[in-house]
Amino acid sequence: MWQYSLPAQTALAKQLDPWAAQPMYHNALHSAQATISQAWEVNTTQQREKTMQELNEWLSQLPTQWEKSLMTCTPADLIVFLQDHWLEAHAGTTLPDGSFISSPNGVNQCLSSMSTRVASLVGLLPGPLRPPVATPSSPAW
Image (cartoon, rainbow, N blue to C red; front, side, top):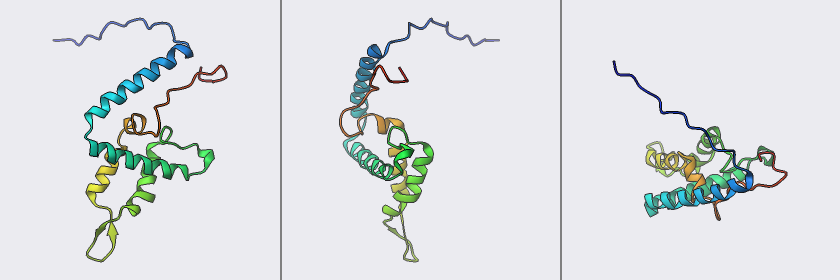
């Protein structure tokens, strides 16, 4: 019987100090942004930017102490955004009874725009990508 063999374990290099890790993050994020931006059609990128901007504005209305942002939102936050805000704000399909709902295609596009952290982390945040900043007082470092 054929047996599956695991790849050999390799020893990890010494842990990077914060000052060495910061340029690595910066370069990798910008490289990923360039790669992904080539994979998306212009209108897809514009739609994702619009959705992420709308999500960012909605998150900014939440209590400050919740510390919600595009970088920290959870799947539950995305569901609440969709249910509480997006469906009503984008209700453009008229039902026979005269009520309005969001179209299934519109909902699909919104979900697609929010489906991956890549949409919020790479190329869709206002301004340049911001890698972690190493400071002597940072607890993570």
